[in-house]
Image (tube, rainbow, N blue to C red; front, side):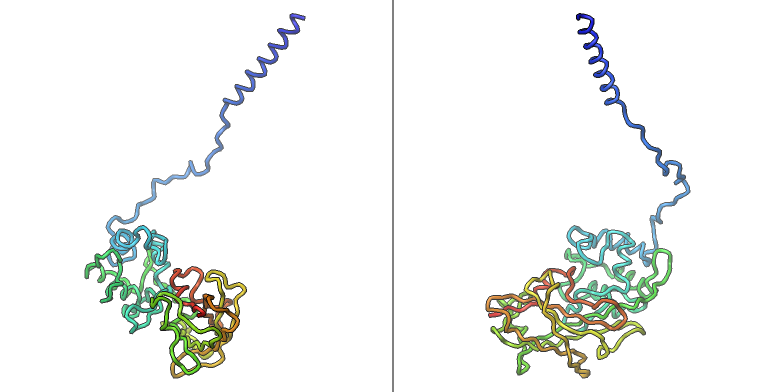
Length: 309
């Protein structure tokens, strides 16, 4: 009986020792296939790049002066976190805000060989208070000159390759809202602030006139009169247009290059804010160009809305 008791103790102790051993034993680390890669031949980027190259612009301007927290650090485009993101969000990329002084409309951020129509130059040199960088310190004329030189050289990438112009979707140039006798409605805004919804009377019909251009700097441009799709959609949710009401634009005024669409508003009761977006398609894309987009800044979505009084 005593022997049996000690045998039980021994077995329990052996089990405990074994489990402790295996619990403390580390698993074998699997072989890392990249451990055998020889990185000694790799070279670092040029520490003193040509200031007129995209590498130089990134090192001297975009990264230190523009990629600030809450700005072009990936919060919104252009994205200046890396050379690659800077290049891909600048060249032939559509702008969100098309004008600063309400005089000239811009459609693309950087257009090779075209300084005058490149939005980035307007943002750097504008006489308005909306110049970039937005930290109150303007770029020097030397820095601006380097950006211009890069554009005049054709916007070469890090390998010196010139970009090929893509067949972009149409750009949106703006809209006005009119009543039945062509009096502007969109100038009467909530709280008299330009960034709020404009006010209409319950049941009032809105006549939207909106303008769009297609690839202004390329041979693939489509006359807006030949768009295969041109319409407006309306929703009470600024971020969800999946079930939106839509109206097709049926009239085109070539003299003003605008589409005209009539929108009845009797279905929305007083106190409702209705958001709208415009959609066009030049026939070269599977999906319509949308403005504002889901990715647009929030106040754009509010500017494109009306309040039923």
